[in-house]
Length: 314
Image 1 (cartoon, rainbow, N blue to C red):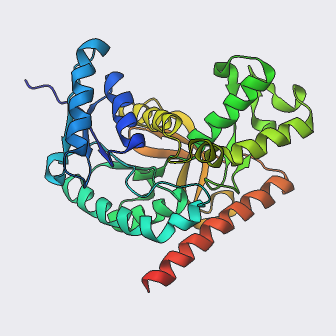
Image 2: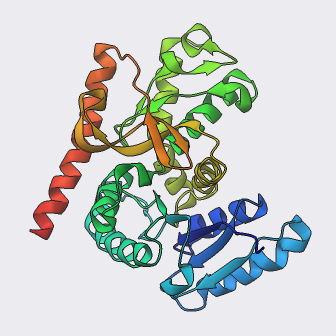
């Protein structure tokens, strides 16, 4: 009886896409099909990754292609395609150009993989999840944005460095849109179960919160030509792993809300249970009035982007 091999398609063979493919394959989670509009790019990167397999001790297939037919019956579709942010460019600047790219690639991908779960990575993230939902016609459980996993990882790393503790012992809680209005929640963030406010002064916490909000921009400024890709790719891997292995991890992801947290019809980052069916359950936690206000401001910025897209397409 033939073995059923799990299949992940990664759309976009740039730094994020190729590194995500590497993480997924080297962990032995699934075969990876790397697809890009540029001829030779996905094939070359896939070949290079395949040639490292004997040294990394895995037997996953890594295939590069320009043809969506090769991605047929993928379990997961990861969308990284789009323009990268450049210095001085906000995520909002990317909106209309990337919306067109995402709409086109999602429509092609879901034609061949109608049962897949979509993980969106392209920025501006929350708005692109809206585009993917419309383009695919999938239920909200199967179109999820990679936002809070990355934002939480950044917050965790800053906390660990500041306190001189293992990052593995730090848990960070981040709500809202993926961008300048994200809402890190320090009182739900812990170090080995100890609430962060008991370990750090409020003013220092606020400095780390602000650094987390500007985490992507800080890297763009340092690189000068390009944007972050190692941490985003690791975030994608953790989501793929939780879905394909039905780990039911509680991760902060961008998902369409239908009344949760008092929001309806907007994609916002919230904690959810991520398993084989995708976003299996949204977890609601009690928020202070200040936190609620910050979340509404963040959701409002997402709503403004969505409205801009709809006006442009009208």
